[in-house]
Amino acid sequence: MRKRLLVLMGVFLIFVPVFAEESNPFVSPERVNPRINVAVQIARLLKQKEYNRIAVVYMQTSDLCAVFAASLVASLKTLGLEAYYIKGGEGLEERLRELKPMHIYMAYFGEKPAQEVQTQFNEDLYRVLTYDQKSSIILQPSLLRLGFLSGIYTDEKLTQLVDGKRMLTFSVEQGKVYPIFVEFRDLEIKVTEESNKKRKQKK
Image (cartoon, rainbow, N blue to C red; front, top):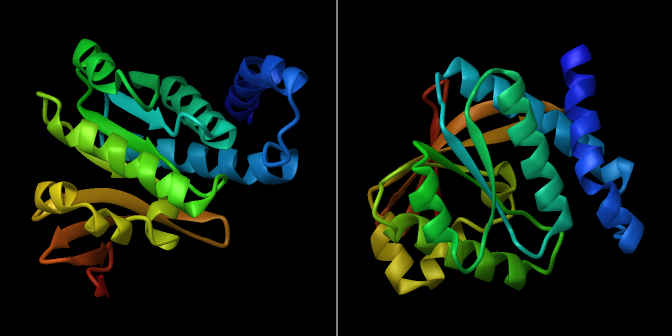
């Protein structure tokens, strides 16, 4: 409980100046608190899976994604892991080259219009996949649930880059977080749960 309180305090201390300058209806306790809870659970799961040196990249125009990313990084550090907080967009490759993370978490979801989220996610995923060091990729749960992973297939270059790749993501059910994997192959997304049940999403 004390660690969780410290994480929450750290996140709000970071973002209080932003709130003071401009009110964002998406960044309210009702929206932020559930996402912080998910971030804490994801951090614990990554710790259990022995992940370390994790760069958390967030959508550059989204305050809510920034809050989630900050809470995830704070939670990971509280657990003794090395984690970095990185804004997406231009210059992302250079920041990744400097930090050399083993894993890259993509914190992108639907505060903004769907097309804006899809465009920024596709652009930053391309940057992540083409910069020189090959890190494993971890995906925000909403990217699968809201269809943004299927939107990768609207980009021919990205379609070629992701084909055959397997990435970690999560499902959230009644506030509980569970790890799952997605595999991109032949314009389909195969979802593998820990129970080894599989299902396919077609383009």
